[in-house]
Length: 136
Image (cartoon, one colour):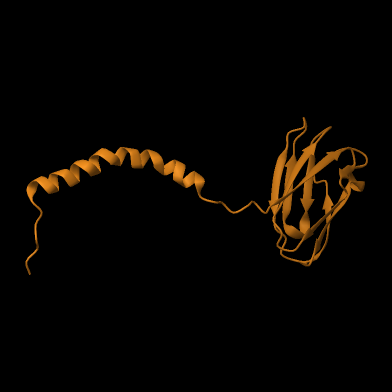
């Protein structure tokens, strides 16, 4: 098989052109990637506040398999955010620092949310509900 070869001058010009534009192409890659469409974040965010013996809101309703981000903050002292049936137990520090909990419940049902850190005489009454409904 005979492979035609380019004249030496033409081959040199092709290599020179590639070398000349390569840095520009490399610099342009981040801009091209930045222009590509991204899938919208379908995670729903719910803010939850914990204070002496109360969760607010005291009912959190989500759909099964829905991606949910809970931004949980304790306004007075250390509290806990526990859903035993889902194996979830997170310590929420005092001083208003937000703790993010992400979940996507797999089973329909009503789950009790408890404070898992002793927070005073009303600790046992500190409850809320996570209600997981079938998808619409």
